[in-house]
Length: 167
Image (cartoon, rainbow, N blue to C red; front, side):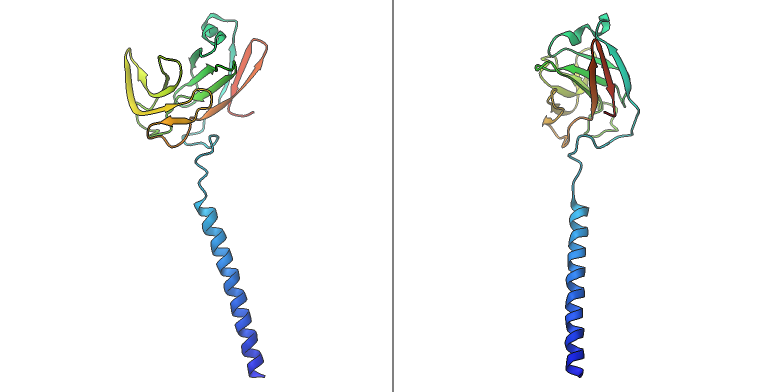
């Protein structure tokens, strides 16, 4: 009788240990999950963005041609609205995702119009961290930044562009 009780205790102990190991493994894997690569994650203070851009106005004239851009107020440090080579409109926050709190951490369109870079023109370019980003996707192409730019949603209705942080 004692042998049967001991076997049941050992089997129960093994079953409990398996459960604990699986549970600990699941918890540790979920804790290690790096969701920082998701470009929609907020990596600086959330702000409400709700812009309407009239493409018929002279201030929006640069957006008529591919690689045209304008800077708008809003977001954390402003917003870049850019027309890609594929004639699509994209919008990104002007805050560089690397050292977000640095005063120089602004995104500017490079004078070649082919990439965005961290720093500002005043009147010459003053670099900050040296990161560069693809203007069509906002992804980092070089420099110390490990994540892309914060995108905003752009919807076109006729001559109006709507830039928001919700679809």
